Length: 202
Image 1 (tube, rainbow, N blue to C red):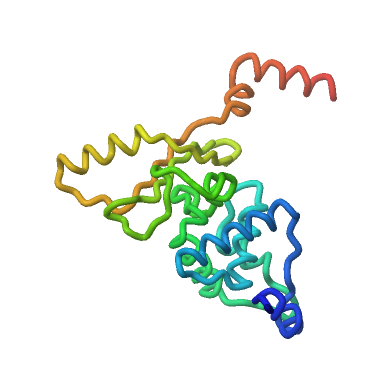
Image 2: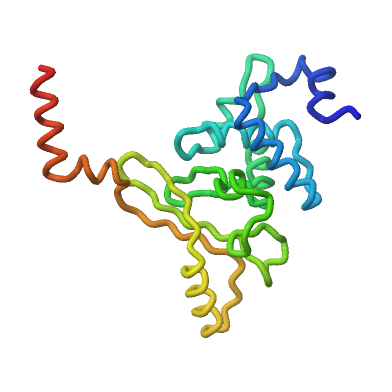
């Protein structure tokens, strides 16, 4: 059976240049495509490319950065094209938007874990019974983002919402600070070591 990817390779080469991803990224993309299919969604080639670029990015990536990455001399997609792909990936729980940075990161727990994921990080569309939550540690120095899953945080939020008769439809927690590496460099010992290294190189 001819897949969308095979069709594009055979018929769309004049309009679209497929991005070759590493085997590890390709495996994650195949897993994402299977998840979309189970949810009734369709992972088009462009959505796959956008997700692959986000997976390969070392740091959170913005919509216009993604737009530049998929441009070629013969292919100049408009911004709405990228935003529609991002909306689809967000809707299906494959990526997260970091509000503080106006950028996107992959849902690492979803794409790296086994297919059977836990109830605190599920991706069903029935938001009354199951929420896709996002919890992040954001380094203000190097801009690195670490996604975490702590069920106790969600239990606390659910309890507060019940007390306030508030219907929670989603939750994103962004903790700002310094990662271990940057915190060490910012410490007195780290600064002294950096100063000594700079003096030795001069």
